[in-house]
Length: 241
Image (cartoon, rainbow, N blue to C red; front, side, top):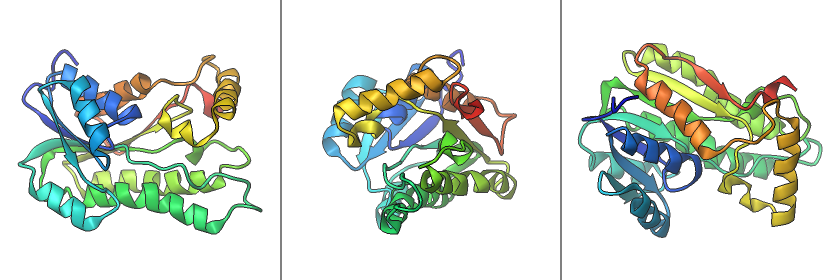
């Protein structure tokens, strides 16, 4: 981006680890002023140690409308919103899938992302951008991911409509494949390693993603002012298998 973000302000919801932190770091490197928001104060402090003086952090629960309203009321005008809030619930074969787990998956990802976007609209620059983070499970036909597909596809279905409805504000999403992030930490270490190795072998590019791969895609959508209503697939070709 050649320091194209100088003078611009970005908020990264869920910006204290994984993809969100990688995006915040790249935005800072490109000259943006960045606010990382998350629930865990210790993670915020650790992120700020990495990001340096051009970043600041705020503790906010993106699943709480009251928390989000208070958070946005403390922000002066800003240009870009990146929403990487997620959860690990909703996976499993449909026959045995506990529906309360699927509901929990929506509560952890769909609703926090949608509320974060809607409640930002009185504060965000109308010529700026909102970028959601979904997942390739929305289109990858594999047993055991129907719940994840429902959560991510629900967000993606809204993207082109919001791009038209909220114009000139640009609305996009990045749809990652399997990425080596703390999202996988719900699995025991041995199972986690085996799962990542399985997807490494499946991906045409021969590896799983790293947070920086997805951060570059997020920053592309922020920087390119001629792109809106787009769901950008960054999955190493996993959807092709």
